[in-house]
Image: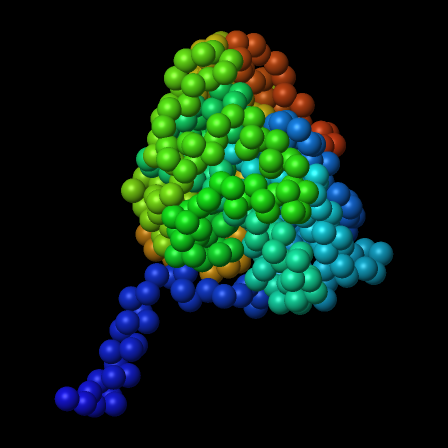
Length: 426
């Protein structure tokens, strides 16, 4: 029985409509972001040559400004490949220098999971934007693309081990026993590496990467490309067995079990949400970060300086780390909120740029929470804030004065585009 042509095309239409939103993306929506403006001061700030990732088994959470500098250049090149720096050089040319330095052996991010999420998420998103920008991607050699692929695979495997529903380890891959997916929001940032990998490879291909994972294949590739940073972390413990088969992690430092899981050879889910629903996974993670009602501080522990009072007092959306805890008791920290301001803000921007965000009621709710939380945070920073963390209180310096931070970069992205985009819907 032949299907009438009309019915055939109608059926195809509804099949296409039923596909996940991810299938509709493939390039950056340049027209939607044509009005994003970046000052010459920020453009000059991000013209670094190399991210100073350290070798051996080191926690690479330090070079925040450098990592987000690569991200910003990738973002700008994706939106406008002809954009130039203040001195007349193409941003894309500067980006290629940065990317090539990052994929050299011994210069790569070490795929250590845990608090590496403070910076690895920016690099992972930069890689995605490079791949989505033909004018940049096509200038890389086949080997350079392969190097990027293998770094992204390693980052994604680390993220699966740390954040998949079936894995529950209270450590990073560094065996530092100081990271857990259910702790404060700054411990949850490596989930954005997984989301970036899903955008880079596609959700289905990424799940295939997981189900077909072979530790020795990865080690062979790390040796071939000289990826000594990743190799040092992945061989500091018997991660091969845990990656491939799961099992308990016995802390070498404490000689006791600190978590167990099933490994990485199965499709990834987070909060029972599959990779095909990237925006939903992001929203689940971000809602926890922006889950508090706005307060000025915790009585006797933290407060806004100069008699400040938040303009958003009592509203939903304050960052969790203004009213959370740590091993020493209460925590109310402007500094930890800065890490989250950078990471959660940029991940949302990337989702929008790639067409992976939508205008649903849950997404609008998330945007409103972010608007309140980010603006409350920025007010507290502008007035000055007495923080309390790890059992001690101190006045936190304003982040504009901290040379190593990416804060000015993210602040400009927030003020010049994302804040305006969200506020127009409120």
